[in-house]
Length: 165
Image 1 (tube, rainbow, N blue to C red):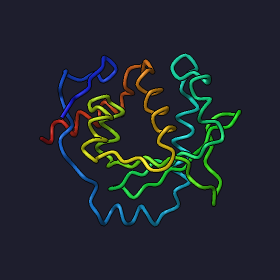
Image 2 (tube, one colour; image 1 turned 90 degrees about the vertical axis):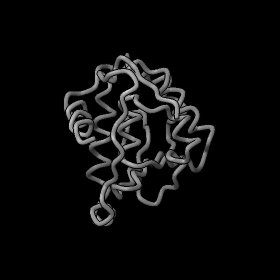
Image 3 (tube, one colour; image 1 turned 180 degrees about the vertical axis):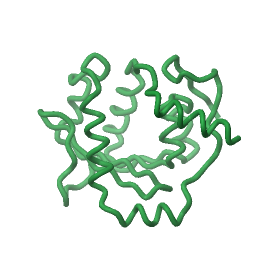
Image 4 (cartoon, one colour; image 1 turned 90 degrees about the horizontal axis):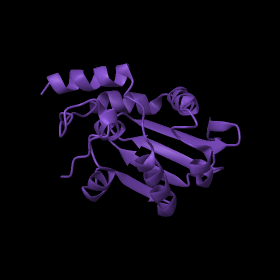
């Protein structure tokens, strides 16, 4: 499997997160809870990303499209859209234009740039449903984005997971 690293990962080159999965009973409980709070947290975080890091021009193809992130083992389904005023939670009943599904571990690995999205896709650990052209735009936009250093909380989580090997 191909491993991707970047200076933004603050990790030793080639280091990987240990294999883990959210326990099924916990994922089943989370799936029954309202998804608005975690989706709201996601869009609030996305709206805090500075323009210099993630330009609105690069995001233009996402305008008005409904994106869905499914964290398969955690029972999370985060549906959001981009409006002229920024990212917002998607309206109930709106169809997803693109759904990206992966485990919590794989999404964390992608965020830390410890895994290559293409490798995860071809290993069937990252699934895309819907408008695949939109999926490629999202992937290419994120690949071209120069990420700031990893937030301390995410770096601490990765460190804890690394020690559990």
